[in-house]
Image (cartoon, rainbow, N blue to C red; front, side, top):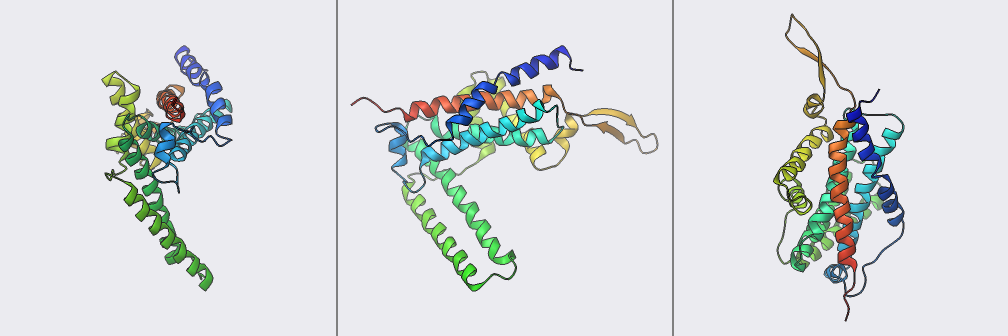
Length: 266
């Protein structure tokens, strides 16, 4: 039985459904920026992996993660931790898009976009390098293919470094999340809440337990050991806060994307 408070939180989540579905349909087709737009010019600095597609992928994955969270709710499932792993991805995707798109000056946008691209190449190189060490009985042709892929990634990373005017590290905790929150929320308290949500959701994503314990309720205390037993249950209220924050930042991301994709009159 849901309380009136829970019903209000559930309604707020479900009200996001139509917009999430529109975005789902939108990302099923390519959507290149208009000629003369900010993003069209931004894409030109590294045409091998366009910044506009980095942003669009971030927006798409954020929306997908929010729909996953909603799908579970529609099935009557409120997870005490798993819901928050999906919401963490939603928050990252939305904030990453806003972080890249928000600056009015092109060099900052481009350096931020290129930092995400370089991080993707770096992680891909780590995976392929590990494959050489851990994959059993690689054939000679497979080993050569891996070496070729690593060489290709190294070339791309060199090209990224040449395109960057100022290397900007991709730091979600100290840069991306705070900057996106500041762009969306005027209230310092709301900005602080987003940063705290990010920290809490990381506890779920890394399966450390402490964030789930914060959402749990004490059931009994063992008199012999003094240890307290907690019950972890899914809660609409707990899900609503990171869900709505991610949604609002995602909505800002789409708004900025449209703005940056719009061509200017000659």
